[in-house]
Amino acid sequence: MQLFIEIYGFLSVVLRGVILAAQSVAVGGLAFLMLLVWPLAPRLAGAALERRALRLIFVSASGLLAAEWLAAASLTVMLVGTLEIPAQEAAGARAVAVDLVAGVIAAVVAVSARRAQRGGVALRQSAPVLAALLIGVQAGSTHAASQFEGAAVLACAEFLHMAGAAVWIGGIPYFLMALTDVADPTARARVAARFSAMSVGAVAALLAGGALMAAFYVGAAPAMYGTSYGVMLSAKIVLLLGLLLLGGLNFLAVRKLRQEPAGPLLRTRRFAETEIGVGLTVLFCAASLASLPPARDLPNDRASFAEVVDRLEPRLPVRLDSPDFETLSAALPPEALKNLPPGAQPPRSPADIAWSEYNHHWAGLFVIAMGVMALLERASRRLAPVMRHWPLVFLGLACFLFLRADEMVWPLGRLGLIESLRDPEIAQHRLLTLLIVIFGLFEWQVRQGRIKAWWAPYVFPVSTATAAAFLLTHSHALANLKEETLIEITHTPLALVGVAAGWSRWLELRLDGGAKRMAGFVWPIGFILAGLMLVFYREA
Image (cartoon, rainbow, N blue to C red; front, side):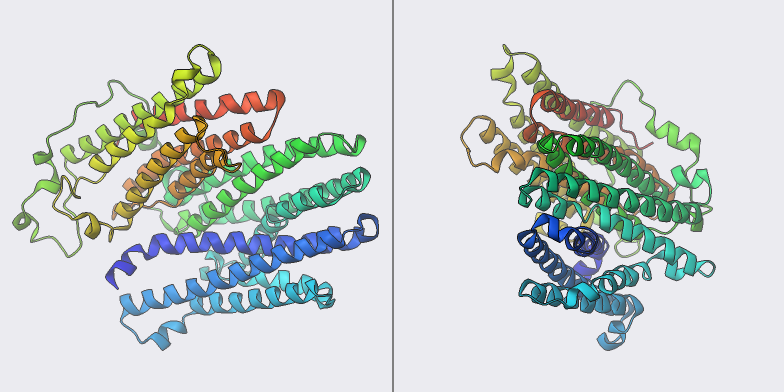
């Protein structure tokens, strides 16, 4: 039970991200049917498109049902373990009830979609109500529900925000289906124009709701950079700007498609694929944001602008010499820790900070080396045969992190490897280390031509983007909220660069011509930037 309680914070964020993603795809599918497929059906001859859309709605609604009920069950277990109350009483908590009700609505959507696949017409009448119920239940369970003033206005803003995200981000998979299923170029151009108009309206709703919530929950500029909520909101805004850039490029491609129906179809599809990936990251970022207290509720635990600048300012020399392990808090004998509260860690000493900075700086050198080698592979034909082995550098990085990332754990510390996984932060470090090993070996085999499966090259961008998304949900759970914010300020840019690197590599694989070459230079530069951030990382 104690292990579950310790990892619940991370688990709840991941589950909430899955819920937002599944909900967006389900609602986006219903909106796509209502606003595009059904009105244009006579011109599309879209029976096959409708069946495929209904199938994806069924799958996403079923996934939403499972995630909602798993969230309800895990919250119930957590309440029983922490409050020591009967399970029946814990299951009656408002948050548990919200998840259960949302699961029931998701089940109704799934059943309705399945019946519509078999020829039923009831979904055409119930789709608007079901979509509104799915979003309304979630909107009523956010920070808005805990506000004493303006709760109704904030709930409406949350509804607009979620609805906009669902129609835009959740509708993109269905748009890709339409581009594939609709063979007639003129009809395809009509679909693209209609979806473009839907997206513009959805973006307007998303931005209007988001701006209202940000103004209320943040309140002032110092809270934007001085709290974890503000830092995560800033990351979400940056990701949304990236989505808007991709959407703008697609908007231009759609205009050309209308003028020339047989025009830039490939580029439209590839940008839409990338929008899905970045959009999912935005939803997981939103889930992480929902787990944090609003910035306006923390008036006394904020980092100052001077502290933020001091933490982010690059300085030389970097720390490339390690303190002795015996000087660390992790090396203290057990009797020195007996007066600490249960589960508490000893205060961080200057040696602990130096150890952590050393780890980050050397990790940065590994990442810079990979970026430079990947860049040289593209820039020099003479060096390319050697530089293409750059994925093997990941193995050196993984070994370094395994030995150094958690000094309290074997082989350096007293904590056993299995026992250490009870700590959610250590568990995340180990998971990322394992991903790095798999990532490096697999990509090296792909680049040597030893793995020829069509999907193999896509492991690299998906793994990079997934690792970056995990970094956005990664928490440090410190008692000092200001220090936690300062750590988030250094980690969040790394996650954003990782997202950019992953999806630019995806575009390199999926595009052709000049756009392909440009994307091929973007992600190595992203690696170099991430490495520089690590090299100049500081904790004091």
